[in-house]
Image: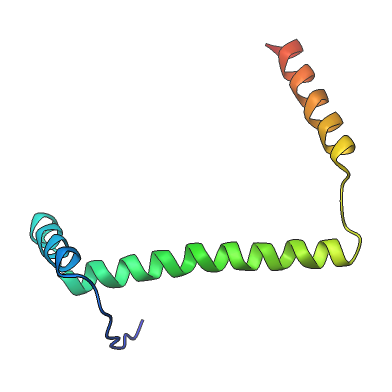
Length: 84
C-alpha cells in the first residue's frame, strides 16, 4: 500500500515515549505512529458508522423493545443453565 506524509503535533513527553518504544521494539517512530493512527481511525470510524447505522434503524422502525430484548436474554440464560 502506498503511503503519504502527515505532520502532527505531540507533546515532548509523548515524543520521548515513542522514541523509547521504537527502540524497545526495533521499529521506527514513524512506523509506530502510523500504526497507532491507523488503529485509532479504524476503531473510531467503526463507532461512528455503528451509531449512524443505529440511528438509521431507529428512524426506519427496526427496533426491539427493552422487554423483548430482556425476555430473550432471560431465555438464553435459562437454556444455558439447563445445559450446564
